[in-house]
Amino acid sequence: MSKPLEAAKSASSTAKSAVTKPASENSPTAAAFLHHPYTRTALPFINGGLAGMAATTTIQPIDMVKVRLQLAGEGIKTGPRPSPLQVTRDIIAQGKVKDLYTGLSAGLLRQAVYTTARLGFFDTFMNTLKARAESQGQSIGFKERAAAGLTAGGLAAMVGNPADLALIRMQSDGLKPKEQRANYRSVIDALSRIAKGEGIYALWAGASPTVVRAMALNFGQLAFFSEAKTQLKARTQLSTQTQTLTASAIAGFFASFFSLPFDFVKTRLQKQSRGPDGKLPYSSMADCFRKVTKDEGILRFYRGFGTYYVRIAPHAMITLIVADWLGVLTK
Image (cartoon, rainbow, N blue to C red; front, side, top):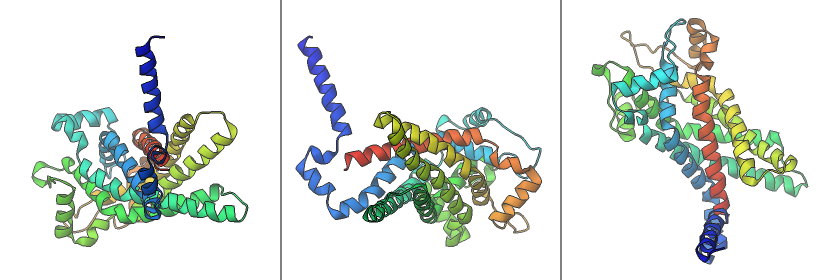
C-alpha cells in the first residue's frame, strides 16, 4: 500500500475516532470542565437545545407546509383539500423560496427554550429514576420512561408556548389579505406586538393543547426511543449507530400518531383572531375539538398525517441522533 494512501486512511481513522470518543478522553482540561457538577447538570439541557435547533433548521419548510395544510378549509366539512405539493407551489408563487423559512427565528427560539427544557428535564428525570432503581437492585421500565417523557413535555411546553405562538402567527400571516397582514419582521417583533396589542397573557393562547400535545409527543418520542433502544441493544447485534437510527424512526412514528390531533387544535387556537362581533371562533380546546368534529369531520384531525409524519419523524430522528452524539462527546 502506498504511503499517501496509508496516511489518508490513518487521518480518516483519527478523524472518525475524534468525533465518536468523549472529548474528555482527548483533553484533561475538557475532562475537568465536563465533569464539573454544574456542567453535568447543565449539559442535558444544552445538548437538547442544540439538537433541536439543528433539526428545526433542516425541517422548517416542511413545518410551514404542515401549518398551511391544517388551516386550509377551516370550518368547512367539504372544503378544499390541497396536497403538500400544491401548498408548497402556492407559497413559492406568492413570494420566494425563502418564504418556506418564514418563522425560522421563532422556530429556533422555540427549540432553544422548549427542546432545551424537555430533553434536559427528561435526561434529569431518567438519571434520577435510574439511580433510585439501582439503589434498590432494580431496573427502570417503560412505565418510568413514559412518566419522565410526559412530565418533561408538559413542563417544557408551558415555558415554550410564547415562541410557539409567534411561530404559528408568522407562518399563518401569509394566508390573510395583504391589508390585514401583520408582516412580522422577527420573532421578537411578533412577541412584542402580540403582547402590546392583545395583552401579555395572549402569549399563552392555546397553552392547554400545546401542553397536551407536548406530553403526547414526548410520550411517543422519548419513551419509545428509550424503550426501543434498550430492546434493540438487548435483542439484536446491530451497531450502536443503527440502533439509534432505528429507535429514532420508531419514536418518530409514535410521536406523530399520538400528538397530531392536539397539534391540529393548537394551530387553530393560536392562529384565531376575533371576528367583527368581537368573539373568537373557538373558546377552548374542547370547543375546538367539538366544532371541528361537527363541521369538518373526525378524520380532519388526521388529515395531512403524511406531511406531519415527514415533519415530525425526521425532526425527532435528527434531534435524538444529534443529542445522542453530543451525549457521547460530553461524557
